[in-house]
Length: 264
Image 1 (tube, one colour):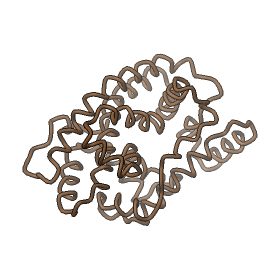
Image 2 (tube, rainbow, N blue to C red):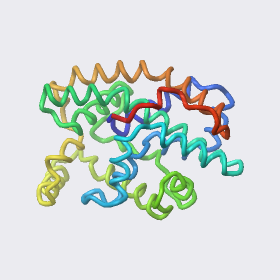
Image 3 (spheres, rainbow, N blue to C red):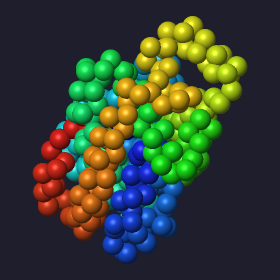
């Protein structure tokens, strides 16, 4: 899946193509829209160094057909009195789903052909986008837009069975802490992090999450291809959001066929 900055930037680009009524609702609930851009990935960060019932939900959702979640979400929103926060969160979630499902198949093919890890392909794409935006990829903190508080966490938890607001809050705080930890411009900090990953048995899976000092030339083609897919997905996502937004509170309307896919 594309990584943190890619999802954030994609959500900003989609927002530019939305109607004023949708933009106004998002502007009043910006924090929830921005968290929604990360979809179920926020749950990965609940005690991320070990498998557990909560981060398993995040991983498992990627393999399920998306319509199940979005139909349920529309029902939940329909039974919530004037809760625009929930609407904003789900519209952000649609952005996440669309970018993931447009990119995942290609990323899988790239892994097979190159041997570069999933995590490194994602993070190299983040690096690519950060450089295009004139930012320093080694020093940039990518989760400053994530606001973690009880009210926000409670709202998000309503979309997940058996996950409490307290659980979501812990995951969000962990997401910010973990991502900031991996910002390692200094060699000493980087060395300590690598040593810790190896000691905990997470090196193979997680070392690619740290941005390399220099771009990996093996990922130049994937960065360009992912950027093309990113760009081509913006307008279809805005149109899908417009349709979904128009059907809020109307559970009798069948979802667009574009939701009949998983995140992979």
